[in-house]
Length: 352
Image (cartoon, one colour):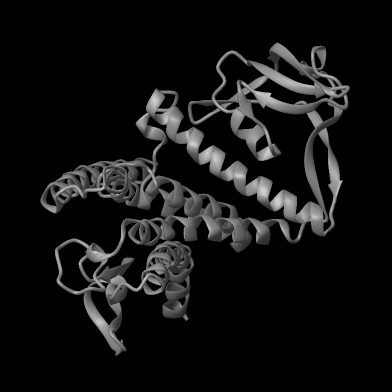
């Protein structure tokens, strides 16, 4: 009984992290599968499609492609002929027209974004009603009611478009003085409001405005379900993009950035409470993966897309040795950054 109890205790601590690893693996496989499908459709030879890295556990050749499962379940890859080197094969990636290569490269990120849309649809499916951004009622002792009014539709906060209450939650984060500029639609016209005041609270050195009003609900039907799914997915994309801008601009420090270790800890914590809690995190991660990969940075898909665009504009490719050097340097910088973030996440977990 003692052994069974010990095993059960270990399993209860381990399984949430196994779930997190599985989710990461799914997101990366979806990304690589996007490249794979596009390569096949564009007539490019795919030499290998692998799940995981390191030594092969097993593999099988089907047609011209080897499908493999590798030992380390932390990624995957779609190896195309002539992807990173020259090739005389007419079906090699490097010998295809730029627009075909563009589609192949961009499809990985698009598959991540599409998965995000599907996950958002799953998140909203159980809801009987949706929330709007129209004020229905103020709470007792509301401070914002001095400028806001019932039936105001919130359109912007600090110049940022508001599509859903998810946008509102992010816009109300890290506001130091408790006052924000807003634009609301009132009686059919946009009204600009300056210094709308809210009470604030602080958690983990980040301040939050307290929402002191309630919003109207939206009746659920096929149309509103579709509209809210798209709006919420757009909100997730906007939050990811704004987070990147806020990080670069210095609004948030490096302590706000988490790598695989930190995100795994968050997913594990959410999994312990409820598996359903994982879905919003998974949607945010896959959308983040899609958008981040489209940034025009070396070693990322966006960097490859930039070189293809240069080729399409100037009708001449950048010499492959120079492109390879740029991507290699970018990969090294990215790897160093990830190691630093991972070290920071591990230290945070150790120190509590």
